[in-house]
Length: 238
Ligand SMILES: Nc1ccn([C@@H]2O[C@H](COP(=O)(O)OP(=O)(O)OP(=O)(O)O)[C@@H](O)[C@H]2O)c(=O)n1
Ligand SMILES: C[C@](O)(CO)[C@H](O)COP(=O)(O)O
Image (cartoon, rainbow, N blue to C red):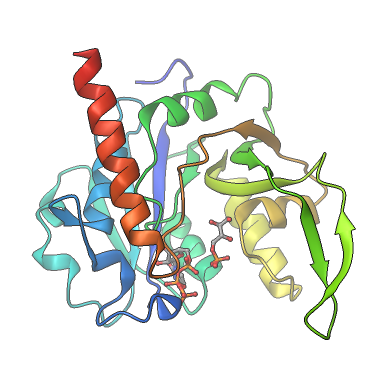
């Protein structure tokens, strides 16, 4: 259990088709670390002691999930996702029955998440009672492109962060604000952007930069490398 009274439920949007990956199957089912991306991600969440249960949102025509060992896990529930990531998150939140639960929303496509980063985000609830997200400060000089393929300007990077997941909010409030933002036509690409639209500014919790989202083909070998590094560190600490 966590140190707080509320239940923590992980929400995993996994209903995408991974078009940018240009693979033969949805990217969440590509092989990784002896299983597949989605299995690795689910096991990080299912094995965390503070997470009560996991709700995964699947594509309506998903033919893969039922074959995964995790599909039978007692702490796992599946729902049908929607046309956009935000619709899948809303569908998962709508299935919750726990009063006062907090939702830890994490992309299926981010298999390199660590328990240490989950601990940091959960512990941030005291500092950020409005909710918070894992994020990584930008390291490079940032350029804004012009229309002709050249640099238009350099963007000051001091206050720029990469939004990662998990993103951690009171579940009922998050569901209501996501629904309102979608109805208002807001382009909701992460949970925080809807909260910001509602005037609630989430906390930024510095997370590992290797918590990458597998999006393009060259991300997969990188995720494998990061996972093998994590395994090496874990063995060195044993
Ligand atoms: N309708 C959708 C679209 C995306 N996702 C999930 O949201 C996460 C992050 O989205 P992204 O990386 O964009 O995944 P895809 O939409 O599958 O990728 P693409 O945009 O390349 O098709 C992924 O785990 C994806 O499965 C979802 O649950 N429902
Ligand atoms: C939620 C997210 O991981 C934050 O960086 C990201 O926005 C999801 O990917 P997408 O391509 O925007 O769906």
